[in-house]
Image (tube, rainbow, N blue to C red; front, side, top):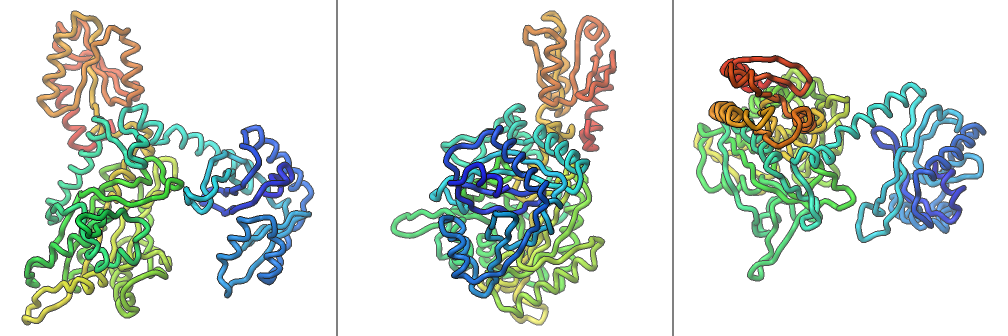
Length: 557
């Protein structure tokens, strides 16, 4: 693709072109903005290169030679400067085109069997809004046309489910430049959000969590002690008050350690489980923010468990059980589990990391979950279990996390009194099931294509009177439903009934209750579901019983 772009725009500058989970992209600095028609021209040039079946030839070269090859390509020179001295530098050539690339590649251009350029987007160099804005071309490639066709169909379905589009259409949330990457939740969106919080609070009661509230802003003394100032500085917001520097909290854990440290704890008091829905703020570059799934202001179903070392296995097992119950309630699939091990940038001693990784590894082995280990993906304070699940169209999302922390209790000098009276260090377990509530809601919208399961639907039923003379009965029906905590609206607009039904279906409302002369005379409702099912003349008490049972069972409809 880069070869084709430079053949059409010889003065263009190449930036970076990595593979992604489902394709690839390449960033370019070009003399004009690309158009969809340009993608067709680029594809045509690519097909010509594929037809020539030129070999990809790899050469390992010296840094000085690489500097000469990359002259005139400033972004490549910057990439070259970032390559450690200990690493090899390689070039790949096909035909007359050469690029700085780590590889590997297929053997020949003819091995590329099915590809498609998908879109054009703007992207700041290095994701930094203070650096040049480049043009990014997204594409994908597969080994057969059938696989490519299936993938393009998935992309088409994903576009229909885009939570940013549905959020606007369903009056759930919006964004405004006045608060970049920070969502405004409208009444319907706030209803869904609060139902998610309410569900988790119900689990907290059963699983022994205590909800707490902690401050939004702490002196940087806390962040320095916790290690965030050293390891997380670039993602935090700061302010100065009365000549003291304060940081807005990006996470709840340091505040919970302060709370734990204010009291004396016996071994009998543990485990102590603090849960916190406090708002968090993290600086994300504008180039990487994305709807609800990557925001700067959010809340988590966040919790921290302080326990004895001998209680860790039981606590991790309990969290995994809670996770499974949650996924079932929200209609999510079987999870994939990763054990994320120590990153390069980390706190604590190697002995501390050895012990923490061993504890989590053993806890997973005792569970029913298969897992794989990935080096370098742990938090700076400890290893973690990361959980991924697929949505309705097969895309994988990272949701839950369980993180084992021996580092922060040490930094804060946390203790409990053991059975023999000696002071001992507790283990701290960081835990989130839904993760960011904003992100989970975005995933949920796309998983359900906006049609929330009945118990989560912001409006569960719409009463539609056929004529004005049926409005009084429509209000009686709505009152009876509201008395049973069913979220209901009346559509008494002077519109045709079919138009009202269509609007309710577009809003993904589970039930439409049609009331006319027959229903008024018989104290019934005619029920139409968003799937198109119809049932005429259903006694109102029977419908109320039916819908209440479905809500309690968390049925889809």
